Length: 295
Image (cartoon, rainbow, N blue to C red; front, side, top):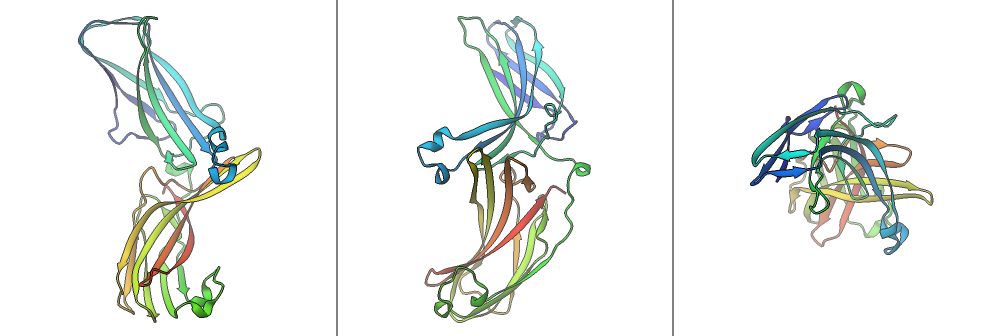
């Protein structure tokens, strides 16, 4: 049994950091091997949506992965591991491959940015190689990235301000005002603001915040852009009182969000929907593009 333990408990590293840890091997008997390698891999994996290429073609239309980091270290030469517990320390410099840039770790639907350590114990032809994989996280350094500057936004929502409404006359009369404290947000800080139901002639059922990721993947045939939900938070339940400030407060989930990223081959952007659901289950949505930064 092989375990990889990193020195940092949170597994978060920056470009230029020394990544160190211990490979632990537990064996009930002496274990012969043909060498133990530690492989460091970092890549961007892109997947085209089935909406764009067809549900069957989607299986064959994964865009070629972009390699950000790829190196290996021989941590033990061929030999024998004694029975019991053996610890092998390791250390390496986290640096991109060639002229590549290290992007932050991100787990999306069509875009995935992932960094892994893979310990590979080579065995003889009669025995199966033993592997262990663990993920570590990469974040930007403050001096190498954009720092958020507050950009507050006041908003007012009425039937006339709604888009994609064919018959405004059929929409109940309402007026909703509010303020987003900033549409440029530090990802480690909460997203805040408030809204007020000034008036509404029909009862409300729920008010919700919906965080969306907008992923764009490029390929030879063109670009595929898809918006998917990251999380949904209810901030108002039932027919809330009129004229009272309702706080907007949302934490950005780790791994499923990252600083807004725009490259030649792909984009990861974010939007916020404020959704108002009426008692008859009709709903209205106001959309706000937001920009995320690390600091």
